Length: 472
Ligand code: GLU
Figure 1: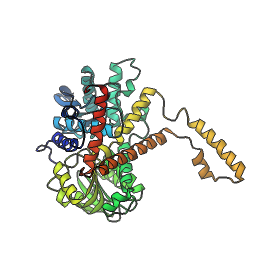
Figure 2: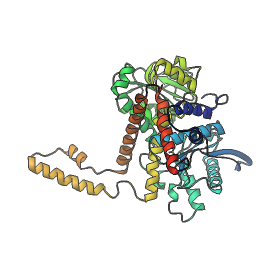
Figure 3: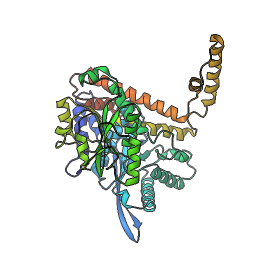
Figure 4: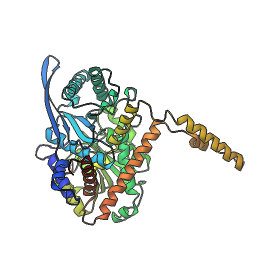
C-alpha cells in the first residue's frame, strides 16, 4: 500500500522511545539496553516450489528477555525486511509491558507474497521456517512463542505446532510453543477476534472519557460516531464489526484495490461477503467507489482506524487527514512526521502498541490454557450455574415474584471460555487506557498519548530489569 524503502521503521520506534525516555528516571545504560534488539536471527533456506528451488529469506528477532518467553507474530509479506521485524519486535516488548502480559517482545517474518504460493508450498515454507527456529533454539513454550500477524493465521500456527511437536516428542507443554492456533489444536475461543475487540474496547474507553471528549469537542460514547477503517483483514474486519454493533456508522472501508464510502453507513458483513464473492471491495450496492484506496484516509470522520500496514499516514498525506481521533489498529501506521502534525492540530492519536494489544493479551490466555491443559470454565461453569439457581430460587421464594425466562438464563449462566476470555480482555484494555491517560495527565510536559504509553512501558521494563538485579 505504500513505499517502505526510504524510511526506517525501527528508527521511528527509537525516536518515539527517546522522546519518552526523557520523562523517566532510568540511567542511560538501562535505557539503551531496553531499546536494543537482544537477538537477531536472519536465515536463508531452500524450498522446492514446482520444479525449481527457491531460496527463502526469513527472520526472527527477540527484542527483549526481561521476561520470558519472548512473544510476537510472524508476518508473511513481500515487504518484510530486517528493519521492519526489529521495529515490530520492539513494539511487542512495549505492548506486553503496557497490558501486563509477562513476555519479552519478538517478531518473525518471511519475505514472500503468500498469495503467490499454493497452500502446499506455504506449508513447506512454514514447516521449514519452524525447523530453522528449532535448530537455533528460537522457539518453545518457555523460549519464544510465535503467533499470527499480517499474512498468517490459524492454519500456519497449526503447521508450526505440528512441526514443533513432531520434533520434540513427549514435551508435555508443546502446545504452548505457538498461539493463535485453531481451537481444535489447543487454541482458545475468542483469539480470532481479539485484536479487533481490543481496539474497540480501547477506543470505547477513550470515547467514554468526558474530559478527553470535551477537549476534542465531541460527545461522549461510541454511538453515532462516524468511523473509517483501512484494511479488512482479521483486525480491520472485526474492529469495524464491533463498532457497527455498538451503534457507530462505518462511513468508509478501504482495501488494496480501492475504497468505498457511504454517508448512511456500510454494513461490514455485507461488504465482506461482497468482496469475497466479487474479488473486490468496489461496486458495493449503495456505496460510492474511491479509485485510490488512500483517499479514504482523507475523508471527514470522527475516528480513523488504519488497520493494515505501517507508514500509511506520513508527512505527505497527514495534512489532509480530517479525523478527530486516529486509532492505530495496525503497527506503526503513522510516521513520526505525521505524529507531529497531529499533535500540532490537536488530533488525538491512540497509539498502536497499546491499542492493538488485544491479540497478544488473548495469546497470553491461550498460552496459560496450554500450560494448564484445561479449558477455561471447565471446572466452574456448572458449579456457578447451580449456585446461581439456588440464590435465584431463594430470592423468588422470599419476594414471591418469578424472574422471566430471559433474565433467568442470564443470571444463571456460568461463564464459558469465550465469556472469560472477553471479560479478561475488556478488563485489560480498560485498565491500560486509564493507566496511560493518568500518566499523560499527571505530567503536563508529556505532549501526546503515544509518549505517555512509552513512558508507562519503559518504566515497567526498567523496573523489571532492576528487579532482575542486572542493573543494581
Ligand atoms: N501479531 C500480533 C501483534 O502484533 C499478535 C502477537 C501475539 O499474539 O503474540 O500484536
